[in-house]
Length: 223
Image 1 (cartoon, rainbow, N blue to C red):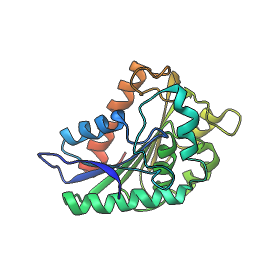
Image 2: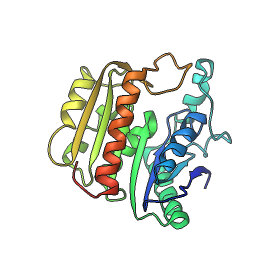
Image 3: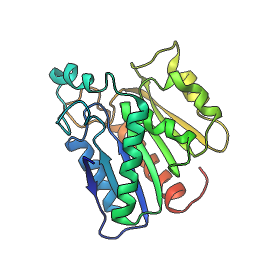
């Protein structure tokens, strides 16, 4: 299995599987993995696009968008979900982690969200998940806690008034929460030179994710 592992020096017994954006395991995602490991989480970011490219990750460059987006074309959500499950099993084998979260961005965000209908993970988090509005019925089938972070100006949608409708669908009951970030766009937590980087939204999202990991994953409490 191709992927990036970040193992903590002082493990807390929990693991995180990261689902990448179309940019794969680039320096941004590796830094995220290292950051979570510094808090005691064992982390793995599997290569979700190994079937279509030998490249593990691409640094952000708008000129390369048309190339990396092709890695997703023809890829199924089921294939990527299987990759992430196998990565979780390998992480548990290496680190002995017992409780696991799935966190994903963009394409990987949709995969992470859809996994909340299964019992593979103890917590699922999607950050600007693409085309989640095609799966609003998921809100009625949740088996695990799900938190969705949505930019107000999301462009990768398939229905009218998508952000409002998606946020409403995933903001009720004991297992679902949603947050909308005013003025933010897809990729709001990407590091420069991404044109949609939004420091305020990114830091708020980071804080909410960290609190959810501590509360739900590490302490086993409800959302």
